[in-house]
Length: 272
Image (tube, rainbow, N blue to C red; front, side, top):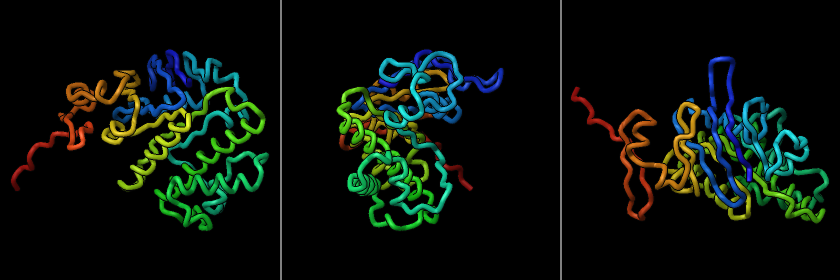
């Protein structure tokens, strides 16, 4: 399990971005962090990733404090897709997808991992294109292929060394659907679900509450840095709670396929 125990993160003396949060994501599940802007979602994800960890409390991966892992160890156990990943060179899409695969992985297996990762994100046809000239959404999916390749390469190395059961693997995605159209938003969340089906613990930051409800095993609802609720979508996403957190009236009901449906209640337009 990748877990936060009473984690607090401050920016300066007076800004508390995350306030005493405890939660954990287990291998094989998708957990989503939801909440309004400024709720502390991305900061909490960064803490769980071990990114510049200087907060209070503790973060552990499979019972071991995260600061006790070396950078190389972390790279084999967890992969992180930031909100705005950047390119420092003119890689092709295929090169970018293979960038985080360990060099010790045989070339033929590396090629397979790249093909599988690009197929997962729907970019196989663009493997030879330069990544820096793609649209923003396509480039984001190319980076998702990169982190998928990182985990697949690490899994290969663990199995090759006879260490496949030494601990869980974790995929942390910070707003992976933000720059995507509806079809690719759904495709990315299906990638997250497939990763979980392969035993990966997936932690996702999402603003779209309907996507969160459809694809998450559990949802952590944050507001002003605090954990407000944690559980299944049905347990967490009540109309009263969401209306309070988002400061607008929100209706929660069931759609035609009994899926949870979250809808803001909009006042009729005023006559001109």
